[in-house]
Image (cartoon, rainbow, N blue to C red):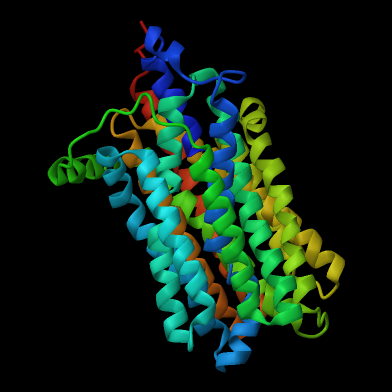
Length: 429
């Protein structure tokens, strides 16, 4: 079954490695080989830039609400528009990368997103802010799927998990640092300065990416065939296991999107009344996700994929319930559990996608990412609406409904697997 963004790539490579056991795979990069370190650092920088920009407004939503006189649900579109646009564009941009190259797609995507990142702080009203963020999310869609495919093509199968791990670490550190930087800069100089600071950080990372990324040596351009793409997508959506994985990824991200979009509002209000910089620093909890994501492989080895999913979803649910307390320590502990459970569940689900898909693995991974970011967009919006209607308890309720959905889908998968196994069991003599 199902990464903070994650390890769908890992599977890409594992599946591809089965085809690349011949001499051609020997020419791929591995630790210690010329270019491997540069490639790893380049994709780490791309991950930092992408996720720092994507979630740059999340910690600033209370300040955005205050300046524009907007409710939490209206301001949440400054996050949801970006993740929603990314979800809609990741599949077509992954198809373009098949024709024009992963390296070119990542370069253009980062360049456009960085320019928009420097314009976002100048938005005169909430509507223009949301529009710029939607364009930025669409631009960023070219990075995740292209990065995963680039690694699968250029890195030896045995070294792929480590290379993907560094890219995923860049994702988490980018998402975390973007929120922390904006939080403290906003406390000192206002939310616009916070967004500008992230824009500058992204410029530095994008330049580092372009200077470090090696040329692709194993990319073979494909043709842009819309009918073939549609046929591949239909095949994936008709696969019951893939469909369950997409739903699980979306539901896990619904929880995460709801919690982290709204948590700033809760912490700046009584009884906590924390300053903006401290609220931004709460996102250091992301480091827990980096650890739990890396540990997902060991969990699957011990508990199996479904067992690991049940543990992840139980941890997430426990965190949601604990966060209801009006004690800051309990809220932070709840965030730790939610984050650990989410990242572990995401890693398990996403790493199963490419293993399950027999053909069109790039499109299978892109579909997972589309579902994942649609879940983020829906979670942010629904969580904010629930918070406006019923406070933090309303947001937690949204999370628990999504958790129940994950459990239901996983139980159904277990039942389907047992039925399928009995169907193929040889009759007794």
